[in-house]
Length: 224
Ligand SMILES: [Mg+2]
Image (cartoon, rainbow, N blue to C red; front, side, top):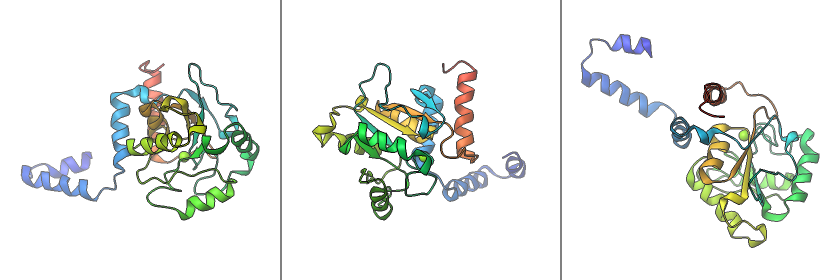
């Protein structure tokens, strides 16, 4: 950015504006994630999980959150119960996954991924449903943490009264990403269980950024 500013020095304001306009159009932007970043900066409590664990293997069954009556569970897929891009339960978590299925039968366990079942995908979702013994995979067009995705989740549980879910507060979301899984859960009123490591600790820039954001807020006392 500094180099860009330096090279722009002396240009007319009009040229300057056009260059930045071009930059904005060509940069790949996940708008919901960008808005979640803004939301996290303005309302940092949305980054804060109710429970922070290392991996899916550490998830308690049943999932007990103080002050909550948890009736249904949303599971992220990538780097949560499955390795990134895998369409099956990670071998080390098979027993944990089975225990969750038993504790949350039928439609009380729902997989919500930003890959399988998202953006019109049905092929990956069907493979995943078969590989998990029939755990439903939400078909949704907007990725987490989009409010439309949160609404699709609530509608999924509401349409089956046997889930016992009558409001988002009855739901817990388990996932490895702060700016998608945790922010969506907190924004919709569900509880968030954050897996800070997952199958494999990620070193990607978005993951390092969101984790640095959370530690900055906690180390400065903004979040406790
Ligand atoms: Mg994930």
